[in-house]
Image (cartoon, rainbow, N blue to C red):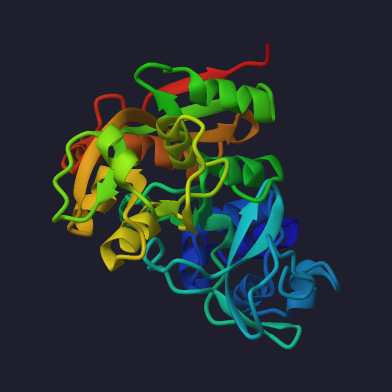
Length: 350
């Protein structure tokens, strides 16, 4: 907004100094002054206070209507009241119901109650990157990302099929998928091309071992033995790579069991005893103290649109994944291989 820049310059302040006085990131000031971002109510009030003026003087009457006044829920909240995170994706601001704190240790941005959003802190919408994936190490990545880049990473736990759908609808910046295997290395690329078309990129997060988690006392050593003996499966949702892997192992047989959403849920189902086996990655099986039988090596990629390729939040993630320290950290996780982490593949339309 021109008014913000004009008043800032009149005060003799840099963007960094205004950001410090207002308690918001400098990149937010830059985006607002460049009219690439409409501030939330909280941000507008903070700026007006720092510049010693009213919100109306700074932005004009009605120009600061935020997502809190007319919320765009990425999907329906699970109840009322509902804690939420806020993020900007593709120029639109969204509210995300808080879920799976094991992957997100960041505080919520506010509480939605009786039709009103109550902000609990300065909004971080324009500093937040949203990733939908089922990588059990994504929470570790989120912590590392915030510490090293100053941005925030929200992880929405979804299987590959659901993650791609959220990306297609413009509700997330990034979608994780892991259909590619050592025998079929182009499956991720083919999936994106089929579901989304061209003009996307794949960022390699890791290679990992996916296989069967079974109770620690069960020392079966082959997938075929486990398939013959298992009577109760922890079933991943249709459209996920883990469910695809199980269906291939079953060879057309019907799997009997209960749903388990996510790798950790599969491992917990087996550990708790209500499932005899399930498909997950080695990391979650070992974390749960289970016996793990590998089935295949998969390539875990992060998909994003070419139109977002120069977003500073995504560029920061790429730099992190390509760093030596991150690759070393990933390589130390059970079943993970960081030899290709950080590589980028462009997906062109056929």
